[in-house]
Length: 447
Image (cartoon, rainbow, N blue to C red; front, side, top):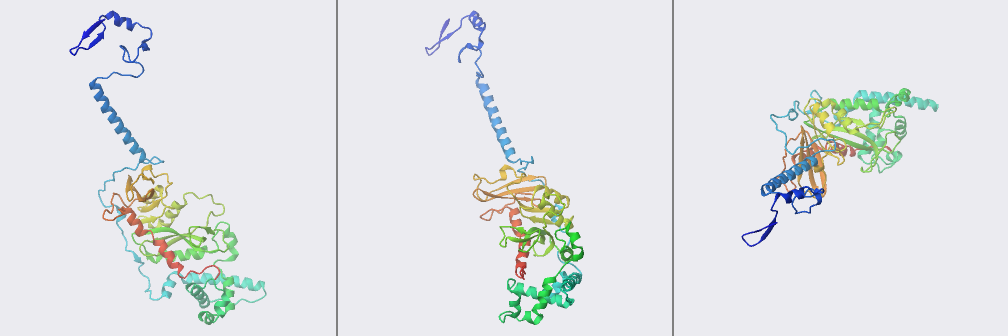
C-alpha cells in the first residue's frame, strides 16, 4: 500500500502494484465488491464524468419533451384513431360550399298570395281535396249500407266547411270541448251552428278517410302509415315546389300531440306533451318554412333494426340539396363525423353539436374541471373542424363543422364564444319556430 499526502494534509490510500489489481480481478465473484469499491459497480450503478453528466441531462430533457409530445398526441387522438391537429388547414381559395348558386324565396311562377285562403290552396291543392272526398264518400256508403241507411255524398264545399270549422276550434283552443257544446251553447262562436248541422259534422268526422280502405290491409303489411301515406306525399310535393331555401337549412324533430291508437306513437318525456307522432323536418334556417318531412313510423314490417338513424334521416331529407353548397344545421341526435364526410361528398356542409359519448371526440375535447370557463379547444382533421367550448365549470359543449376552418373567437364578448357556436345559435331554430307557429291552431285528436 502507498499513502499519498495531498496539499491540504489529507491522506489517500491506493494500490502500489499491478499484482493487487490482478488479485481483485481473479476473484470468482465479481459482484462481491460493495458500492464505492474498486472494480465493476453492482447492478445498474454507473460512474459518470462531468461531460457524461451534462449529456445525460440533455438526453433526459429530450426524453421528457418527447413524453410530453406523446401525451399531447394521445389527448388529441380519438378512440377511432383519428388525430385532431391543433393547427388549422391552409385555405388557398374560397370553398365551394360558401357560394350559393340560387336565389332563395318563393318559387318563380307562383300566383300572387293575398289572403290566407290563397296560401292554403298552394299546399292543400285540388288533387288532395278530391282524394279525401273520394275515400270519405266510399267509407260513408259502406257504413250507411251496413246500418240500412243511405249516405249523402260530401262535396268540395261541404268538406272545406268541415275543415274550416276544425281549424276554427283549434285557433280558439276549443279542441278539447265536446262537439255538441260548440254547436249548441250560446256562449260559443255562432259560426259553428251557422255553417252546418251538428249531426252532419259528426257524420263526416266519423267516416273521414284519407285512403282506399279496400286496399289498405295489403299496404299495411309493408307500411305502418299506409292510411295516410298518399295524402302525405302529395302535401310534401307541394312543400318542395313552393319555396327555394336559403344557404342554410335546419334538420330537427317535431312531436305532434296525439294519444289515439297508432303503431308508431312516440313517448318523449322531454317534450311538454310527451305523447305524439314524431316528424323529422328540414326547414329553412332563416324563414320557418317546412321544405320536406318524414314521419317516424319505427321499424316497418319485415325490416331489420335501423342503424345510424340520425345519419340516414339527414341524408334522405337533404338529398335534393346535393351539389348546391348549402349548410345543414343539426343537433346532437344527428351529428357525427361519418355524416359530415358523406355530406362533403354531396358538396354540403354541416354545423352541429356532438354527444359526449361519440368515439370521435378526443380526450382533450371532453369536459374537465381543470379547463378554464369560456375557453375553447380546437381540433382539425382534414376538412372537419371540432370545437369544445367550456360554458360552465366542468361542462363542455362540443361542435362539429365542415364550414369553419379556423380558430375565430369573439374576443370582444365576455363569454368569448367561437364563431362556430355563434353560427349554430343563429341557424338551429328553423324547425322549433315552425313548431311554435303550428301550436297556434293545433287541432288534437279529441276534436
